[in-house]
Structures are given as C-alpha cells and as structure tokens.
Image 1 (cartoon, rainbow, N blue to C red):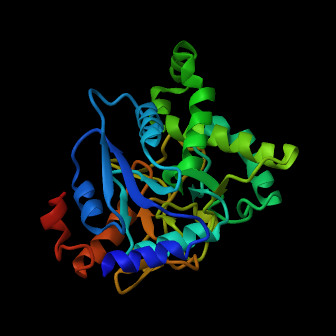
Image 2: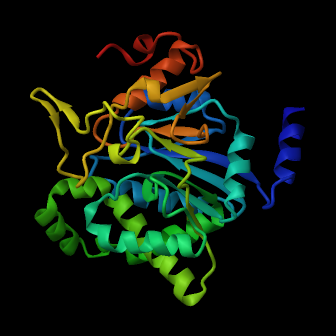
Length: 324
C-alpha cells in the first residue's frame, strides 16, 4: 500500500521520477548522520572519504564520481553532513517544492557572498539571475550556498561534469599558490567556489547566448533554510543581536567573510508549529535547516527545541549529542 501511494505521487510530478535519495559526504562519524538517517524524508546515502580530509575538493570529486552511478530520472539531494537537520515536512512536499522552480537543479542560498574571491562576478551573476528568472536578486538570501543541492540525475551529472572540466584544481600548482596567498581555509570552501564559478558561467550563458535554464537559487528558502543572517537585512528582528563569533575575549569577526554575520540569532525569531520551525522574517517553513559557518548557535538552539518537543526522536538533546 505504501509503495502504491508513493508510485501514485511520483506519477503526478511534471518530470518522471524513478527514485529519490539524499546523499551526504562524510570524513568521520558524527551524531548528525544518525539524525539525518532516522528522520530525513527519503533514504540517506553516506559517501565515505578514505584517508585524511584535504578540503571540500574531496567532496566535489566524491559527488561527481557518485553521479556516474545514478539514473537520469533519479532525484538526488546533496546535503552537508554535520549541520543539516530535517524540518518535519514529508518527501512529497520536498518534491512538490523542487518542481515548482521549473529548473532541473536548485541550489541553496545564503545572505553572504562566500568565498570573497568570487564577489565581483557573483554580484553581476545575481543581477543576471533575476533578469532570466532564476532567482530573486532583491531577496536577503540571494547568494549561492553549497550546503544544499537538489536535482534530476541527468542535470546534476551535466553540472558536475562542467565543474570538473573547468575547475581550478585541474592545475594543482596554481590552486595551492592561490591558497598560499589567501589562506588555506580557502580549500575548505573550495566546492562553493567552484559552484559559484559554474553558476556565473551558467547565468551568463542563459542571458547572453540563450542557453537552457538549468539551475535556480532557492532565494526564498522553500527547501534549504539558513540560520545565519546579516543584521542589516533584519533590523527589527535582530535589533539586539551582536554579529560575530563567540571567543574567550568576546565576540570576534571571522576573517573568512567581509560582513559580520549573526550566527546566534535569539530563538524568539523562530516560531515552531508541530515539528517544523520557521524564521519570522520569511514566509516558508523550509524542508531542511542548515547551520553553515564556524559557529552554529542558532541552528543548534532550534534543533534542540524540536528535539525537546519529541520531534527528532529524542526528548533530551543532551542524551543524543552530549553536554558541551
């Protein structure tokens, strides 16, 4: 009966769907993997890294390799492994929202351009994005974030083939020389750097050469919600929030971003309904919550609220994740 119900739903979508899988890339075990596997709306596949973590180039190549194994009509959801949790909505709502974009790939968004190396071209690409109908250039979350990607198998394979063919890491000496100049933290954001470069190429091709629309940004955060904010985007909701990252000396500013961000937004700016949470500044309860960045205070706070309500399988977050 459950299989029949799913088949009927799959048949109702505007594109043929043969299977749906959530995929994460992990270099170690983490409790969040258990949470995802137990509560995500579709089965979760963990791609395991062999050897030492060398940065997100490994993840990018891991995804590219994995996409060679899947069917054209599979729907694949790539999520960051350690800082994403599901928001209590079912798999068919995920697919309904995905297909509402009208493009075969949708990528998560955030309120900050990262890494800064793409900033000049990224701002141009955001304007082109709006001009061709691939995202809202006036939305606070109008910048690409690599922590959430959903797409049809054939389209993701085409996108990652393009990334693989054109990536700077094809010349490793040039890549390391660049990392030596800007800092080796750059290697830990490398996948986002290359996805930005792809998106910049893509929207330029759509606007200037009439290429097929392949990728939209989730600027309204229907699917991928973020708990990281720019204070100036939400002056009333975040009027008493202090941007920066907690240190022993007080709040500090990350060298990786040019605009101080609020990572510890107070829980009063999130409402919960049933087992789902929503940021009061946005219209939608997203399918997933992502706590990107070096400090995950607001993300952990919202996750713990839902766990304490029994929504993610454990009454006590301390029992699941341990006390800090």
